[in-house]
Image (spheres, rainbow, N blue to C red):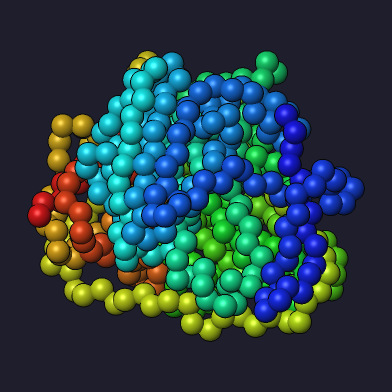
Length: 498
Ligand code: C2O
Ligand code: CU
Ligand code: CU
């Protein structure tokens, strides 16, 4: 398989300082390959029409070729791009040997019928056609698609199935944002055995959620990014890993946060580090205002707890970190900072300013209903899928037939997410269809308003979120986005009635 190399040339374009992208066959510099783009499908005349075939196929990951679960023989899968108001028609062909389906993570679309309906099951050999409309007032942002078949979600995502779903809109038209060089960063880990296959998860992997030792950006190991001196780089980041967390830092360069899961924030916020739990996205601008040199995008150590915290477990499993073999290189807390990509300066342009105003994030009204959801887990000694482990919301595992929350369209609710996990394990909480705002964390108000659909609830922490139920009635789900936890019970059904 040929890797596509892109060479970025610093070029002062007419009326913009955008850097030219040029597909060639040469690496950018010794030891680096330029960042690759997947196949891109863009809507035409208001229609995005795509065939996606889920199948096992040979895919290049870093410097290896592996038999991965892929969409159209790619992992990450093709990038889909649409605009507010567009119709989307996706024919999903299932050539796997198990059922699958598609979820449109973060999109505010109907959860029913052929929309973002995670209760659809597409049997092996079958085709299902998804068709839905993106609301005309849908925010621009970085969303994604992945399988969501209960009991198979972690395995299929970890096996390679996931792709970006971008909504283009107002944020993209802000002059400074438009002038920035745009790069997508899909963070994904893979595990590949000697035969080139993805190994099954063991007990430890189920508890922490499965992680792989090959940590990639767009399926590549340490690709290079470039920015002209004086220019802006717009990084659109997605954590598409089944369980791995990323704590990102770019040497010498702070991040200017411009968007979260649900799109633009009001104005840029400077941050030194960016923690992305599974499922989360962020967009940042990087100013090319340092000495021309190379700078590493690092994944810093982060401890999400879980292993060895429970006395009995710790002893039983041999005591914590470092245990568990190659499958788990650094999961509880990883050792060293790990380079994910390398930024190089290339060319120069007249200095570009940062944008001031990005969008408006409304203040939500006081809630009409308040609920508390407790996140926890229990260790068992069974032999089934989870070997007795269960992950819970409010003390019980997921039941497909039970409605856990009934909400009313047109209302705003406040949910108190309390992580009472005895292992103090972090759990990223995710709600479908309905973006929310974080109000506070352990009593501390959030410093700025932002639309989110996935929020990290650390061990022992309580996070309050405010959710407006707008536009779409129907049944959908909320769950932990460590998908092994979801498959093992940390999910609930939400019924929204008109
Ligand atoms: Cu990205 Cu219900 O998931
Ligand atoms: Cu989702
Ligand atoms: Cu979890």
